[in-house]
Image (cartoon, rainbow, N blue to C red; front, side):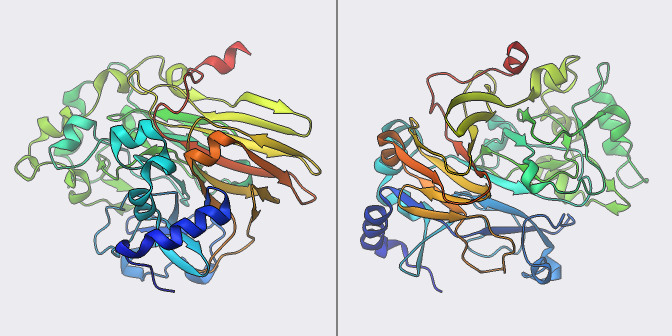
Length: 411
């Protein structure tokens, strides 16, 4: 099935929006990583983990409602980009937004960004990944990119097993100095550089999450993770050996100006030092679900919330509708939705959680809810015999107010 070219999207988009009452159905977007090991919980068929070739690496990510390109070497032209599907034809969500931006995203996001500036993914790895950081906005701008704050939620439905290391190192021990990290980089080719000796690991808990500002070191563990984040794929790997696998220097400096690739002080300077050595790191970054709204046989919970450096950049909710239940959902802005359990109806579209997905196959578990549809209200119904559960994430400043990190303790 070929994709409709950008200049020909208008007519099919209009039909799709009319038929879906402002809701677009999306196809799975798979992303491989050459340096990671698939965790095998994405419902992708076992024969397809290396569908793009062993040289490209295993598929351990599925991206949702994405207009952000994956920064992978040897990437396909559309890698990381979500496709809409209607009448057996595909077209890029990015093109749909370019065509009908205000209707799709709302006037505020469209005016300020002119695009959907966020995305989310399932990240699913067998073991831990390198202690790394995502550049802040100023540092990322030096290479023509944007910074990358992100968040985590560990959905129980996609974590039937913990895999090899359900712990994540985050930040640095209080008292750590920039010189300590510099020595780790100096030792890149002398065996394990020891950076994890300067950090602390937190056991991951299903049904909870974390908020990770840019510039904060973290080495995600082996739970399958739902990750609403800013629409960027910048990073730098500060750990040189993980589970016996060597991490090339190129992955430390891929988003560093070329003339700074050997400037250790500059590379260390990209870290947000105060946030890394925060003695109250967990208190300031750990989040648990908070009920946003509920009714008979349904409950809508915040699973990602809080501010990043004082800004509401993204947020996410988890809606659960029990068998026989229905509700009317009315959000103040657009969202990307992925179904994680059961089957149901969102507006006129039927949704079903797949048991197994072949690479390239169309599913019925993912949609994009436009601003117009969300603000008008959408009827949602559980049409099955088990809970119907969907995760949906939102763009910047969608809500007048979101809970703050730590608010779960006040309930």
